[in-house]
Length: 115
Length: 113
Image (tube, each protein chain N blue to C red):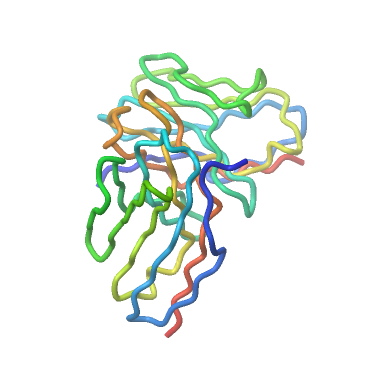
């Protein structure tokens, strides 16, 4: 069964450094998402992406965040000048369509630890 | 406040019994709901979904019930197995387009032998 893959599984970064998290969505999916989950808390929406542009973003997704689809398979989340509170699991998801009956499928996440 | 929440943080059931996990939502405009299962160290895994024009949907060993009158969603798991142990999240989608999902806090389902 096709799946969303994310790399790396764990990223340790010094505060203030830039980090790029990578995702390969399911190949025939057109909508891509990033979510984060702080330890012990619920999953929170960050951003959605379609047709090479951001479709929706939450208030969490401020100017330090950016997303990109650099080629036909990868989808990246960049965090500039990381802060301690950016430590979390970051999940990528994709869906075939934005219509209500198309579920979002998630990868296993990247654990980001900011020191 | 949160638009999606769960009544119980932990639910413990005997192996073989049925379990029911509940979820409340507050936004009557939500038109799509999903249940996800999250095992330790893994991402949310899709279980079953339901649209607001339905009140029941069945999958393999799972049933989702939607009561729009009281804004309540439940997940029923029949004949629970050890592999069902996980945290279960309900999530809602507001409107059309590429909206993100709004997740509840999760219920930890523990299967006792």
